[in-house]
Amino acid sequence: MFTGIVQEVGRTVTNNDGKLVVSAEKVLKSVESGASIAVNGVCLTITSFNKDSFSVDLTPETLRRTNLGSLTAGGAVNLERAMAIGGELGGHLVQGHVDGTGRLTSIVPEGDALIMTFEAPPEIMKYIVEKGFIAVDGISLTVAGVGTGYFRVSVVDYTRKNTTLGTRKVGDEVNLEIDIIAKYVERFIKPGESKITAEYLKEHGF
Image (cartoon, rainbow, N blue to C red; front, top):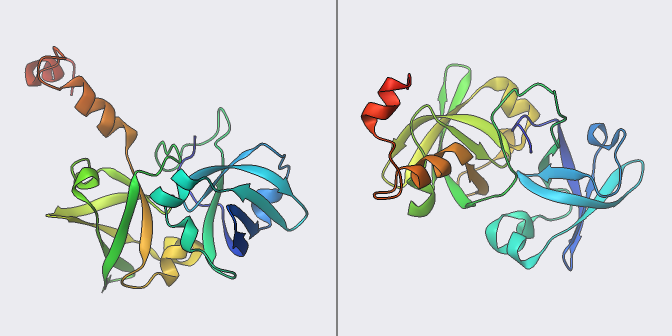
């Protein structure tokens, strides 16, 4: 489990035959083989490491669902170690199970922030709500607006400087993971499968 708070931006060393090697520094402290790490929001297992890089295996399913297959030498990636029990939850609960990819369609300055708009497929958009959470390349963000086939986020200066969003360009593909709570809510309220109603939620303080 992760929080969507990026700890370091690493660099792709090699990406061949289902094996990705990433250079890093901060996330390698006290690392062990078999540990989980999020790379651009994808939960992966460290298979080997040395003082300045680590290796992970990419399965065909991972390559189909994410943008990791397009990484080339020198490409930046967001990195986050798995959340420790009792640790601070600064973002939101992120599983590292990417639901699919989206594409950056516009970047508009707004004060010190940037309004970024991403298009996403219908099977992802149906779970995205204004002021809800979304993980974009493993970054926990708050949805600032939603339209037909797209959503917007406001990216503050710190996030731009400390994640890959600062170098993203229009047309870039990004990994998307929706808030797991949205999936559970949908499951609970399917007609004929649940007794949860608007009155029930109101009665219980929602």
